Length: 155
Ligand SMILES: Cc1cc2nc3c(=O)[nH]c(=O)nc-3n(C[C@H](O)[C@H](O)[C@H](O)COP(=O)(O)OP(=O)(O)OC[C@H]3O[C@@H](n4cnc5c(N)ncnc54)[C@H](O)[C@@H]3O)c2cc1C
Image 1: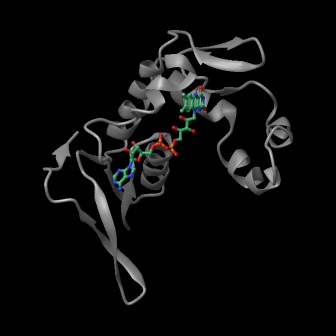
Image 2 (image 1 turned 120 degrees about the vertical axis):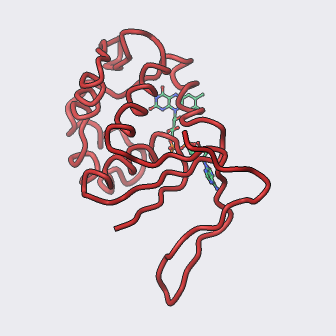
């Protein structure tokens, strides 16, 4: 299947990686000139990646209907993200309050791991590419419209 993912933040990057693991041919479209701009400011630039609490505790710490996230949390756990970063050479450390940070103290290191994984999975990443509309024909999504004034770039 051909899959287009709109937005190259942590969600879009992970969705692209997951879809490519399932065998899809994936294109990731990001309106900014680079991926993960917000990710770079997380945790005051250090990125609080996850928590070291057991997954069963995660739901108890979500406001509202945390059970809604039960399957998502079990599909991809805190250890899974740690393993993904380790695979690309990034170690993590546990700080006060069960917070997990990269040993580098740099959110950029986390972003670099995502970019390496996207490349490894052959995701076609395009930046400066703003989606303005989703194209639907006969009730099926068949494509996207892009803002014209910019040229999409191969990332
Ligand atoms: C100050 C601050 C600190 C934070 N610290 C942490 C932390 O330490 N740990 C943590 O887990 N979370 C933290 N967060 C929360 C975290 O940043 C968000 O949960 C996370 O960025 C959400 O990821 P996302 O991919 O859903 O959205 P975003 O990161 O917002 O990514 C969405 C992407 O989609 C792109 N986009 C939007 N519209 C279009 C379009 N039409 N076409 C193409 N591209 C489009 C955007 O440019 C953007 O790159 C923090 C947030 C803030 C503001």
